[in-house]
Image 1 (cartoon, rainbow, N blue to C red):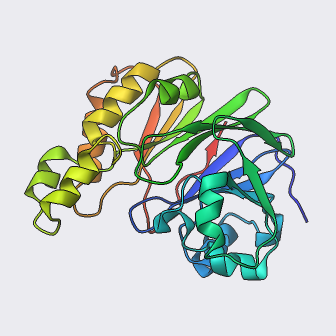
Image 2 (tube, rainbow, N blue to C red; image 1 turned 135 degrees about the vertical axis):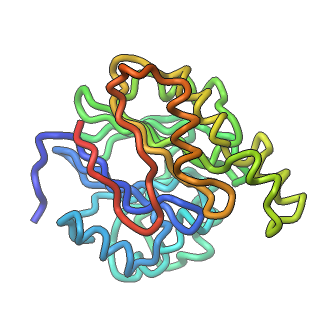
Length: 263
């Protein structure tokens, strides 16, 4: 039975290089943004939120990389959940999810409805076929998703303007990335490129641009297990925020669900 929510609620089920998924609940819809955990783990973490798979109105897919779609194949064998993605991403995923029929294809940059939940997609710079971010809005509340991007383009800044809450990538500390011995130089270059990932300082610079009275929550996500630490990511953010700020900020983790954001 579908629950009814008077508020707009966001719970990050996992965020990191090993897997990403977020639950969004509103009066009109219950959706997942990405499904980068196994189907079993997705069910377990949804259960912690009191949600069953059958209640999911749709899965929004940012891009085709495994840490964002890992659970889709098995999920779609058990549940007829509509998958929302753009045409290029669907082309890649259909080779892996051959039997699924409920594809909801949107044009990058377009807006559409899932129930009463308004979804705006926007292009992000990342090394995938056609990666996107999302802003989800229910009535006067909105929440933005900006992970897996090499830099904050004008499209990104425009899309995230005036959101109430934000999941923002802070993937790596620049010094730790350069010191890392596990990654070859070419991989380090890709990570730090304009189609790679945001560093802590780049995330802070983006956030500084977005700071406004309505922004109340920022969850830092997609932290590298090897090339970042929570205290470093938070320190970068704290450096651009006034001590009197009421902005709530924390790091989302790959191994546990986050606190629920209630807008």
